[in-house]
Amino acid sequence: PPRYLNAIYLSVMIVQNGSAILVAILAGQMTDGNWAIALISAGFTLGYFVVVEAMSKTFGILHSDRSALALAPVVWFLGRVMAYPTRLLIGLANILLPGKGLKQGPFVSEEEIRQLAEAGHEEGSIEEAEKELIHSIFEFGDTLVREVMVPRLDIVAADVNSDQRLVLDLILRHGYSRIPVFHGSVDEIVGIVYAKDLLRHLHAGKGDVPLETIMREPYFVPETKKLAELLKEMQQRAVHIAVVFEEHGSTAGLVTIEDLLEEIVGEIADEYDREEPQMESLNDHTYRVSGRFPIDDLNEYLSVDLPHDEWDTVAGLMYGILGSVPTQGETVSFANLTFTAERVQGRRIAKVLITRKDESQLVTQPEQAG
Image 1: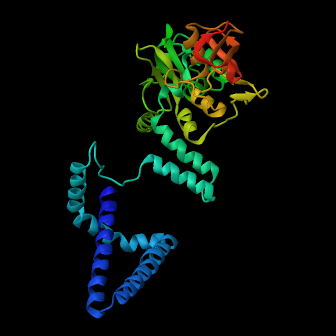
Image 2: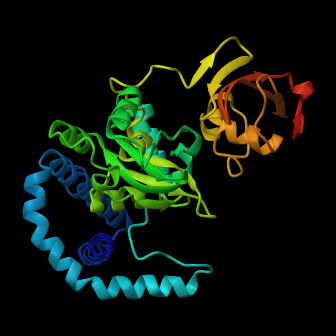
Image 3: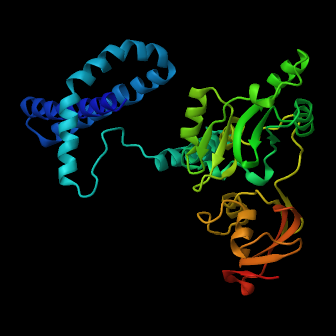
């Protein structure tokens, strides 16, 4: 915690400065020559480094549990004694410094931790997967629900008046364990049917019972909610699926705990997932991507700078530029890229071909190519 860390920083500084002053006083009393004072100071510095810095820290790393148990009372005492002096000093620094001043905590930023992860990876002490996990954790806290949700057009849902066996067929066909139930349209989701509840009723011979009696209450979240907040809420409520709504109250999509975890650990495949690549390189200049492919990832893979604040996905970019659902084969251009709607299913852009053009053909403003 910050109060203990700051107390340790201040205590170490006091000991170091006090030791230096004490050595200077003793050296002045015991010797007359400047060379002797310099020799004693050098000896003290060497001894301090070997004993206090190198040996103690190495021992602490090798015997972390024993060291922590032994020093815990000392750290607790320092935290109590140094609490007010550290607050006073940080408060004084905040008065002297312009802007927001110093924070009352450990002075380690997110960027510094990222840099440490990169340095550790370069030195070989941190593996590639571990480094990516650290970066993913930080990005997770800043990612919005709308960036990871299953969009409205891809929602598999059942009408509240549907027969239980029809809903079971829907579940088996798509491999989902939970299905939203709507009244009239997907904009009015009234519940969530769990496959296990449905099977239990069918097994008990209650297949004629209305869905309303077995469905569970839906959990609604805004599309602007951050993933870290949503994960915490879903854990507290013990729910695995949430209905996402947009600013006007219409259904924007669905999000599950699996979607959230995939943002940290990467794609989680199960027996129902079809192994269809999100991005496929056809040649040096042409790529095939899913319409749901994130703009952030596209920027990273192709080293481009498409505006990810306006659009979250490649399909969203095409919708935004065209202002309508594209026909199959319709193209748009932006920067040095051409986007072609290769496969359109209803109102959904399933597949997009991306062609990288020469720099001489650079388009600075988005335009419809026909």
